[in-house]
Every structure is written in structure tokens, then in C-alpha cells.
Image (cartoon, rainbow over all chains, first blue to last red; front, side, top):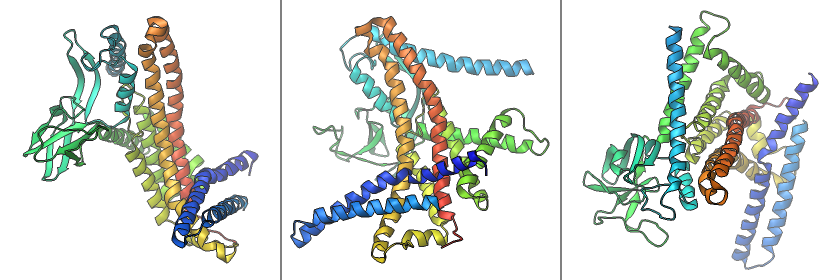
Length: 72
Length: 381
């Protein structure tokens, strides 16, 4: 495989992350909504922040997983 | 024979050039008279608000096909173009008539009566009036209060554009295919099309989908590539199509991609999506939800929005720059404003020709990438 082919291939693979930003944003937003709903349901006040932070963690984790897959 | 062919070509180019110049001339010529008078000047486009409305109207689909319009000496608005059939599924069933019956009215003041039902066109959408209403009444936010939308199957301007693109593709590619029976290297239009077909195959499909499986998807990828490209280019001609700037069209294209990669997903793909290996068990169901929304919602959504937004923005910018010669006339004088508008519009137009290709390429590229992700088989793990 020539150098040009390698470059092309890695560019193609990087395109897989084209929707990653949107996906992270949506994950965090859905987590926030879930936390808010849980707060209203159980009449607590700390769940919104907890679940939103947890979804930040999960979104980052999923992004790292996707990025690692590119190197396989 | 050759001379006759050249003459026809020349005539076609002359007609297109004439349409361009006359339609632009009618916009700039109107600016001389009737400043600051709205709605009483026969529909001239000469204020900032009217320019914005005109652009908004262009970005939407239209029920009739207008090449250009101008205001005559007597102050009468003249339209050059043809009307298209309106096909509606109303509360009483199928209703059809020609769009000319609306007389180019777009604010609901012309009522068309058919089969005992009344129809009005408001902002390029057709409404059916309630049975007791004679005219459309509006609330403060300019929504019709006594009319409702109907299912609209009309042959609109965009549908004409789609049919035209399909016809062009059919003629071009059947001519190319026929040539391979008798010759090795195609000539004429085929010589330009062959490298593009090879390009889509070798640069888009093969590297993304893989040698084993790419053939099955070539039909879709080639169709979608040339369909988007031809329609993008048609949108840059004075015919004034805006087909790939209709979100319904790009949604349909993205849905095709979605259906194709969902139904061709390999066992590995579903296993990876729903039960990701190498991850703590507690995270697997959550990641499955995230991956699923990614494949079913976010990927098609980003596909359809990317194409729609790029084409809409392109049309908006080009039309705004052409309108500079009207809106900047008072500040800079007619020569400077027209010169500025000409140079800027020409510059952006050249970029738009590039964008027309780029967006077709990106759409095909990402479609093949998603298909490639779905059909991929892993040897390891």
C-alpha cells in the first residue's frame, strides 16, 4: 500500500466521526432530560445534575470507543 | 448536418442567455420608479423587505413555473412561464385544476372553487376553506383561522425538476451503456460520464464498502450522486430550481440510505451496536441506546441537514448579492452598486459550482461509509 493510499484510508475512517459532536450533544441533553424527569418523579433535587454529569461521562466514553475502533 | 447541430446548440445557449439578462434587467429596471410604495406598484421588488420576501418565496417550492416577471408601462404585472397541475386530496376526495387559477396570488385572496370546495394559496401552501367561510381570515400571527391544509400531490416546480433530472440521467446513461456494445472508449457525452462513474466506484464505493460487497450498492450510489449533482447544477441555471434545497427531498434521500444500511447490516454490525464487546456490562445497554440513536436518527439527520443547509445558503447568498444592486443603489449610486453586485455574485456563483459537486460527493461518500460500517465483517474478536 502506497503512502497516498494510507492517507486516503485514514481520512475515510476519520469521516466516521462526522456525526460525533451531534451525538455527544444529544446524549448529554437526553441525560439532562432524564435527570429532570427523575427529579420530578422522586421529588429530589440532586438527580438532574448527577444524571447529566453521568451522561457527559458516557458520551465521552462512547466517543473514545469509536475513536479506538478507527485504529483497529 | 454538423452545421445544423451547431445552430441548434447556439440557439439554446442564446435563449438561456436572453432569459438571464431579461430577468435580471426586470429586477434592476424596476428600482427607478415608485420608491417606498408597497403593494401598490404591481409587485415590483425594490425594498429590502420585498427582496427578503422574494428570496424566501424562491427557497420554497412553487405551484407554477415562472421564468421571469416584470411590470408593464401600465403598471400591470406580467409573468413569463407556465402553470402546472394542482392535485389535492381534500375532505371530499380528489380535486385537480391548473395552478393558473390562482393568478399568481400567494396571500390567500384568490379563492378557487372546485367540486363545491374552496381553496386558497397562502405562502406556497394550499389551504381548504371551511364550508361556511367565503374568504380566508387571519389572526395576529398571520395564520389562517378558517382554513386547513390538504394533502398536496401537485406536480410542483421541484417535481418538474426531479422529472427533468431523471430524464437527463436516463438519456445520458442509456446512451453511454449502448456505446459499450460497439466500442471500447465512449465518445461524445459518454466520454465525460465514464470517468465520473469510475470515480464514484474507485474513490467512493471501493475504499468505504470493501472489494467484496461494493457491487451491490453501486446502483444506489451512482444514482444518488448524479441525481444530487444534476439538481444542484440545475439550481444554478436561470430556470431557478431549488430541489435539493427542499428539506423533503433531502429527507427522502437520507431515508433511502437509512433503509439500505439497516436492512443490509451484518450480524457483526448488530452485535457491535447492541452489545458492544470489551465494555463493562453495566454500560452495554446504555451504549446500545446511544449507538442506535446514532445510526437511526443522527447519521441520516446530519446527512439531510448538510445538503439542505448548503444549497439553501448558496441560493440565499447568490440572490442577496444580486439584490445588492437594488438595495445599495441609494447609498452608492447605480454604477457602483451594480458593479459590486456583479463581481460578488459572479465570485460566489463560481464557488457554488464547486459546492454543487462537493455536496453530491459528500452525500455519496457518507452514504457509502455508513453502508460500509453496516456490512463490515470482523475476522478477529
